[in-house]
Amino acid sequence: MASLSLLSSVTEDRTPRSSDSALTFAEDGISLGMVPHGVLRPCGFTFRNVSTRAVCVTRVTTTAGCRVINWPSTPVSPGAEGAFEVVIAVASGRTNQREWLTVITDEAGGGVYRLHVDVRPAAPIHFDPRVLEMTSGRDRRLTRRTVELNALPGVHSVQVRPGNERLLDAHIVSRSATRIVVDVTGRAPAGTARWNSHLEVSYRWGTDPRQLIHLPISVVAPVPQERRGRVSGGFDRTTRSRSSLPSSGVAQGRSSPSPAGSQGAADKRGQP
Image (cartoon, rainbow, N blue to C red; front, side):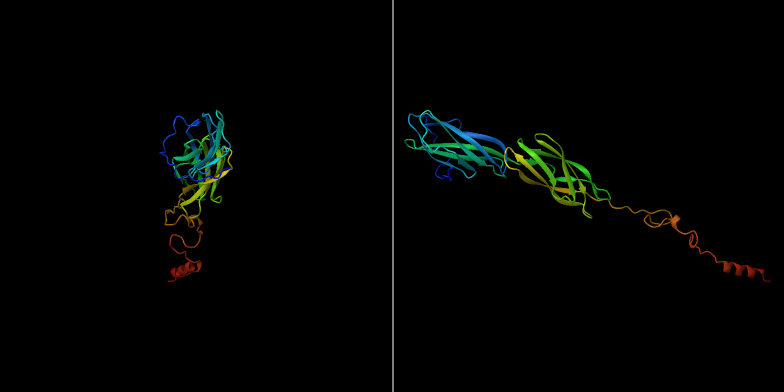
């Protein structure tokens, strides 16, 4: 592996190599298409020595997001082919990425060849919308909500789990090459109608090691308020009903006469 640095003296508008150049490359540029950001993507260039003398590659330099490995350190004979491999560190937060390589040889007059690699960085897995509108009953249990995750081709071995297992539950119900269907349920926290959480999604892309990403979500699940009503007679539904009152005692706001009081009234009526 060669130690490489950025060659600032070589610019993109350098005069193109002439027809008598010693090396011809199969292609001056490679397009890798959409690649998950954060991964290392290898690719390679091949060339042929079309001159009548052996040519040695003396140096290969790259821009910051590219690294060269296995470039030929011995002279390439006339008519022979050579190759070298590069690794692209796919950046995040960019829609297009172009990395430049400069190959310098020991040709007479100096041989300089400019190559490039194009990449379209993309999120490996994403979904919309980021807000899950769910409903909950008085027991705060959330209704089931289906979420569709979109994955780049090549993403496999996907696993999904909620960021807060006390509140949410998530599991995959089906998946295809680029689409993953996840069911989300759970239980709303007491007194909270909206809270933030995330889904932990692990995946593999190609033969790369397993990667872990967090997909932030905001859950909106208003808890219905208990309704308090009135019944005839002015009693609240949440208090004792009229039938639960004792049959003796207070009734309709009038007191029951005592037996002693009734006997006294009868004696007074019997007197002259």
